Amino acid sequence: MVSFIKFNIAKLSGKVACQLAKYGPGSGGTYPGHVFTKIGGQESIPKLSSDLKLGSVLITGTNGKTTTTTLLIKLMSKDIQIRRSYENNILNSIVTALLSQKGDLGIFEYGIRDLAHGIPDTVQRLINPIGVVYTTISQEHTQVGGVKNPFESYYKAKKLLSQGMERGAIVTNCDDPRTALIGIDKQNDVAVNYYGIECDLIEDIGDNTIDCPSCGRPLDYSHFYLNHRGIYTCECGFKRPKPDVKLVGAEFGSTSWNLDIEGDLYNYFAKKNVKFNVRLNVPPFGFHNIYNTLASITAYATFTPKTENIESTVRDVFNNLDMSFIPPGRFEVVDIGGKFVGLGQGDNGDALKINAMFMKQFVDAPLEFIYTTPDENEEEIFNDHYEVIKSMEPAHVIVVPGRHSIEKAEEYYNIIKQDFPDAEFYPLSYDKMDERIEKLNQLARNSQYKYVIMTGCGEEQAMWEEIKKKMINR
Image (cartoon, rainbow, N blue to C red; front, side, top):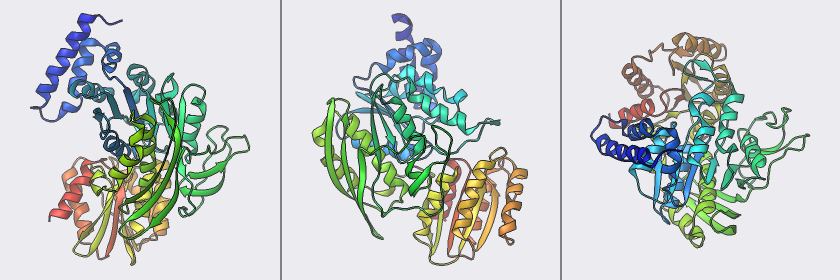
């Protein structure tokens, strides 16, 4: 138990740090939280978190976290005042938001790369969220801090963020076997709302089968929606749960999409099920953002205290959506004088495939693929990436190190060269990031091809956003 005096000194110091951080060089996202925790200790955090009258919702997953968080904030802000935190991988970012903002509900993105740094069970205990939202889980960050990070440990870390919950609700993707199992395992402890697709118009190509997360045997898929997300069963009895919120119809046009979404789910504050039915008109923002749309709507309908607003708020937000909701550094296609360059982060096979599917909407001529590679001990990511590269059937491939190791990047290049003999390799140093950014920009601009896709590993925001700025502004 933290003393009243110690807690108040820590809280006052944290609030002073919030004011000082406004004039600092950019560490304000974590500095006040660090000050508070340094003085009051981690055990002061539950008392600080209890300032939120309605509680907190944490959003995690491999892909879609920031977009889902952004959309959920847009929705929930129509009903109540909230405290928020984006692109957050450490506890001090959440603590800073608790100190620096006002609101009755917290909406916090929480990325988890591994058990040691993510401390998911500790975060759950200290924040005591009323909700955890899962997007999708696939292989990413197979090494953290130079240490091998097995996928089993990565998956366990994601599960631990909700494993200790004794109240609230979990929102999770039923089309992803890994996130579905997290929900199934918690159904006896808390409410679970599943979201997914029930529309045959969306179908991925190829065999994206994964092993059953329950027993380890290969799953039997009858339909793939996007990568390993689809309709599946296993001989052990594990199968896709029925979605409580689902896409039931879609019309895909070149300038806009119509999405029909139905919901019948449990609302945490009303303590009963609520129903809704909406048709949305959105920009053609890629199939992956359909999942982010479903995740955010499901989370909103689960946690809004104003259930009478669900349909009107969802229509208002999505029917007036512009592409500014896409987080900085994420994939988009830029038109530079009639040349279309698709660029952005693709740190795992799932993300890279999403980028490729988005790019394919524009391509009607030969394509050049500028690929930024993973690092050492990230062979699994490369294997997933390479399947996507080959599926694009590029006329030409350029390989550039996306992370630190030039030697490993050249290894990956030599594998690629077996299928693409004309592939080129540029050994650009990670320590000279400005030179790397400039060269990548030049390669895209000077390409002889009308269509160029530039994606893979790298700095999750900074590198991609800087390349984009140089490309647009020059």
